[in-house]
Image (cartoon, one colour):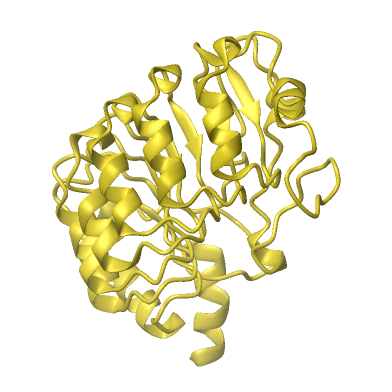
Length: 280
């Protein structure tokens, strides 16, 4: 029976993000050049930025920013650039970015101060796609993001590998800025059941379709709250790999929620197939 469940889980309850979370943007912006897939979680959570691994910030930050912009100025990929607060301050004063809607800022050492700058600059008022993966952001930074007017049009938000914890999640999901959000990545943020329940009961996530909770500390209680949520009415895809729940318990919970029409990923099994959590 145990062996059967090991086979059942990967086949019956897996969802895969075949496109990078921030792999597309506005018309005229070619993601293959500017926002390549950095979601390499199955290789230790470390992505590749495609243009070398810098040891520090670029010598000429303005020139680097210009190089990494899309031709129409609506997208920019600075993943792994380590531009820091100085760099984001320069971006905030760059006229060519006044219409930017998509920003990939993984591993730039922005911290909470970087979030404050993004929040307060009118340059970023059109943001729809934002990746702040691995930027040492704490609940204090999340509070600014939750309240910032520049974030009320967000459709996709990647906060993977920061320092949010349950406190940061509670602050985040209590914000109307998330109303238009369709994809949210909260991987590797030490989120427990309190955070999961906050997500499940948030009145502002009714448009959310994809939720990534990879590598957190959520138990069966938190997962059940999400599957039973009455507010996550659009949610279809959930990544729940590497949390505090065993496959057998996940299988039983899955079987009891066949009518939720949500697909649950709980395993990194190589035989990956997709079957939604829906009864026939």
